[in-house]
Amino acid sequence: MIGHLQREIERYSNTHAQCFFEESISSAEATATVAAEAATEKTPMEICKGINGLEKVILRDIRGSSVEIYLYGAQVTSWKNEHREELLFVSSKAIFKPPKPIRGGIPICFPQFSNHGSLEAHGFARNRFWSIDPSPPPFPTNSSNKTFVDLILKPTEEDMKIWPHSFEFRVRVTLGPAGDLMLTSRIRNTNTDGKPFSFTFAYHTYFAVSDISEVRVEGLETLDYLDNLQNKQRFTEQGDAITFESEVDKIYLSTPTKIAILDHEKKRTFVIRKDGLPDAVVWNPWDKKAKAMADFGDDEYKHMLCVEAAAVEKPITLKPGEEWRGRQELSAVPSSYCSGQLDPQRVLQGS
Image (cartoon, rainbow, N blue to C red; front, side):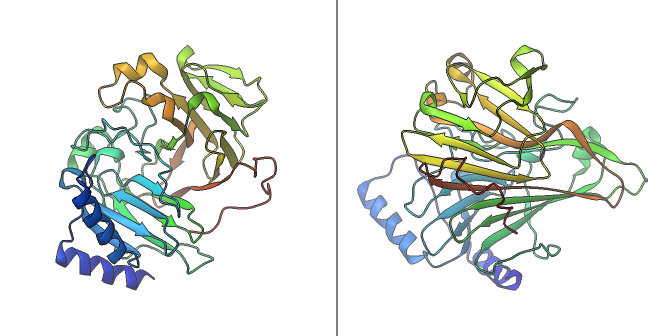
């Protein structure tokens, strides 16, 4: 599979395939776009130009599902099911211009989550250019029917000035045969001075929802959380399920490996399965904060919800040569499969 991807990378790098996304296009252009998509439908991986000429990778499944990943930030910006329905939220005001981060999709927060440290909010991995990794180390896998891409980030001299640690950060983005989206991160301490380093981490996933007031989250009941709106004070969740009627910014601690987001209007349930990420961040900015963000539409808070697999409360510490792995698997299923009916014994699929 790796050899096949290498050939695809070389093929598309040499031909400099172009593909562009526009907010509004004429009917003629739309027809041409559909035709182009049909022509490339059987291509499992494509490298092309995205918004503002930024390079992106498109993964496709034969059933019609797809994923788009920008090399800027190694950021997933689109995840569509077999019906071509978008499952992730990206703001209509998102700024695809470095060094600004991209608002939406799945930003990767490393080596710092939010303001839990001295670095810029959410660290620097989300606004660095990653490279396609042509020869990644072996990943465990239980199926050959998967399409994936491997990206790698190493620190620059400038990065070393603000965070003086040498590391290799590899991420594999996998589109499973059922349209599931998997992200597997591997972070290795490559310091030569014998020093360990510590970091916090999150997959800052923005889910697309029909109406935030009609959404509930299950799997976090009775858990302790840190409330970022109350100076990170610790509380215990009291509700049977989490619902939304105002701004929420909480870090749930020691969370289960499975969390469900139920969208009643869409009759759709997102299931998050995670490994190596004990915490879960739940965030919606609501109206006042939405209006204060330049890269976020005033009313867009109604149509998004962040539920983030994370390691925040207890930073990860790696000695030189040690490697950490954090993984999340996202799936979208009909809401008739409410979270209590999903098989709690199901383990993360290998990616």
